[in-house]
Length: 311
Length: 197
Image (cartoon, rainbow over all chains, first blue to last red; front, side, top):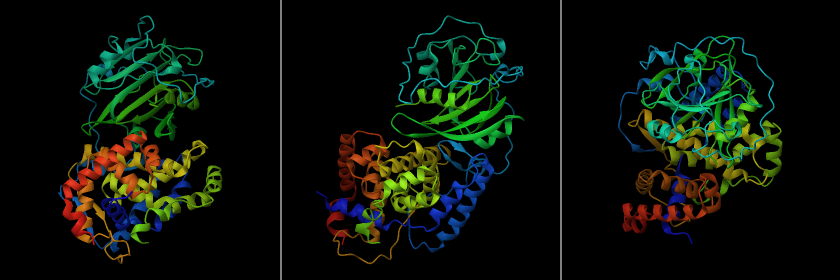
């Protein structure tokens, strides 16, 4: 049975100024923007925002939840939400910082890939409902990787999590990882899990490595991402679906990307290296960015990512 | 639209399953009809969760674009409305969380109409009372505010709210009771008995 307060809440709902005839048109116009053209999507979004702001002129009352005026932070002028998860679009030009002050070997020493064969893949036969493996998953025998990977010493998954505060990303479709590492940037560390080549995972441009699966504290801006990836790479957006039906946004980078920027939790862009310089899928869950680097098809990458997603 | 009918008016077209099938096949017109049916609830939900009417517009726009692309993967057993509201709720929470990291001290506004004629409903709020109530809702914990947003601002029932927020139905019930108790404590008995006409 409804109480008087519940009735008042419903009444308040009716008082909110939400009607806007432009919304449907704005949405439909964005549906027609070519997905491959992020610039087109961005333009559509900005255009609709502009029209919306004009429409606000008729507002008759305002109730401020918090009325404290400050100058916008620099980051606010850099990018707006692209629309999905943490993925944001490129804004006005900004001055990027020099390479992160993290250990020099983390960034610049990754070798240019040799010819990176793009192998046709059979998607792993795994449904999105597959639960992620326990963080106590067994580790394959130690393997020495090229020093260019700059992974340091392997750690246990629990230690990786305790050191970084990040979940250790484990993919049920990839079997036992070769090793788990904590690397920088950022200073607080990111976790990199190395998977060996397998029947459904060809060797990457780095011998002995099939895939790298990482978690890092921060978000990725598609605009910054696209600027740094180099020629011959393409960037596309897509969505993943968790077992419970929640939708997670992702970015698929095809080609030979080398470097990119992510936005750390202090809202600062940080230069980072894609160690395998091969196809990369990036997605975010609860403020943690996940990154899968492997020489596999987009569909196969999506299957792997979905096996990592929470239920 | 009268206030008391706000939640009911966007409960979805009667031919929604057919519209969903057409939209899943890429029919823009069908998806437009779906947007029209659910936009008001989506905007109210996003407004209360993110705390800003203008930002809510962007969130809802993004949510529907996202929903269009995800629609082919929607399970046939799932109801469109809570599925849609789950996307809106997640987008709103992400936006609020991200904003909190970036600019915690920025003006947020919730716009309200003041020109609605009173209805026969005896719980109509005065403008002052409405502002007090929206302020109090804004001060609820995130979990409590999300439940209140789904139940009273998007017109979802308990089961739909549970689905939209990804929590158990019992959790919705307990959070609702807790949130209402906090609102009563904060606003006082005089609010319910006096300020509301």
